[in-house]
Amino acid sequence: KRGIMRVSGYEELISRLDEFIRKFYKNQMVRGVIYCVALILGSYLLVTLLEYFGRFSIAMRTFLFYAFLLSTGFVLARYFFIPLFKMFRLGKIISHEKAAEIIGKHFPDVQDKLLNTLQLKELADKDEQNSLLQAGIEQKIKSLKPVSFSSAIDINQNRRYLKYAIPPVAIFLILLFAAPSILKTSTDRLIKHGQIIVEDAPFRIKVLNQDLNVAE
Image (cartoon, rainbow, N blue to C red; front, side, top):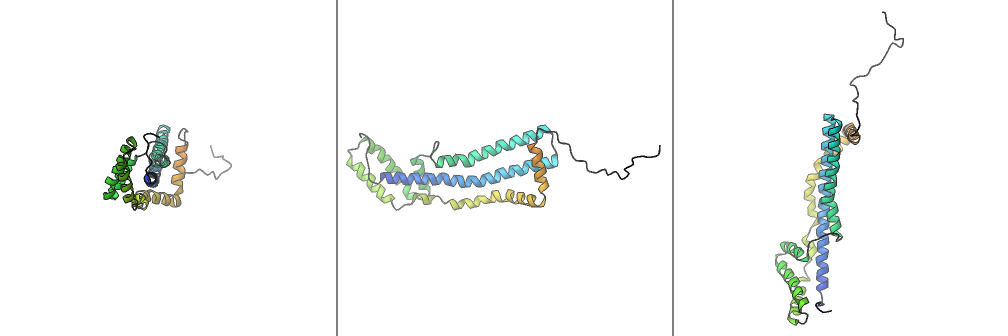
């Protein structure tokens, strides 16, 4: 078809860039899982501890309950679902040119070649009879073949973000095993945020005299 030039190896180059883009969003999703654990669990501990010691009114408990739900939804959407959707090419994703720039930060000698190849392809689509452009593209593609674009992203480096998730997880586990009533009582009060909850009396009355008769 007019305006479209088939260049041997160019489709493979685009496929490698697409693979890099998928890994780019997979990396964001893995990091997002750590952020979600840290932020959501941290928020849960905050509202439950506040409620446990504050014994708030219906209005305050309702505010805390919905504030927690909204913040949880935002965190999940921002750090997990959006990268997940983009990993499957749902929604707007980074362009091949932007991917080339990111790869170039890891492989400085690659960025110019990649960008130049993409630019030459745009020119070649407009002038499919230009054999010099075709030869230039072929030459640059061959020079890029030994480079693994995906290696520019190391998912294991996300381990450094675990420092944000470990403290809330540790506190949660300590409370879960050492003082589960704190979490259970507060969570129950927050779930029943619209109800009036009468506090248990700090004492118990036990009637020893079943006769219940005294001298006048």
